[in-house]
Amino acid sequence: MIETQSGRKIKTLRSDNGGEYKSDPFLKVCQDEGIVRHFTVRETPQQNGVAERMNRTLLEKVRCMLSNAGLGKAFWAEAITYASHLINRLPAAANEGKTPMEVWESKLDPRAKKALFMGFSTGVKGYRLWCPDEKKFVVSRDVTFDEAAMVNQNKHEGEIEATKTMSSSK
Image 1 (cartoon, helix red, strand yellow):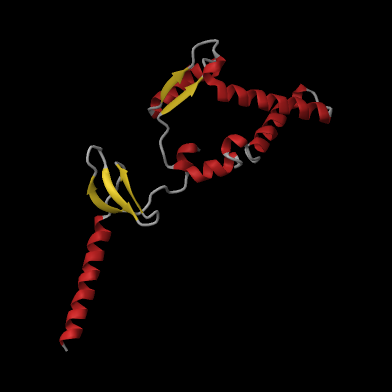
Image 2 (cartoon, one colour; image 1 turned 135 degrees about the vertical axis):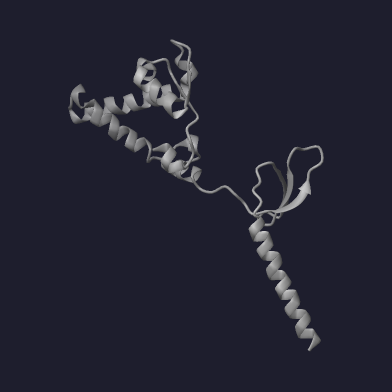
């Protein structure tokens, strides 16, 4: 789902040393897909702190929901599904007041900005660019040159110049 929605390939998957992540069928899927596996050291949940904290948050919500609804542990799967649904749709301080869904969707937005190539920056391995939207120079190594647009623009400007010349000579 992540690869389909983001258009990017999963390269590395980090997880704890739990058996569910180290099973032969799961490792085979990762190997077949070219996904490199990284594991935390056994019995060190602090190495996976963000995930461990989320697990705790989810379990606290599940306990609360089941208790308030007067339901037993048999309904834990439904409760945890709903708790994760809520968490993904509520603003979080860690996300600057945005919901996780807003953050995920903004990650999929294009980040490219149009800029003009101005040359190379001295002492820096990157291109020097003028960003008209920000009205400032930037240095970047991640540049895609749109040569077709440049050719079309020059061709169009040449036509305008030729028209001006022809008009003034009449």
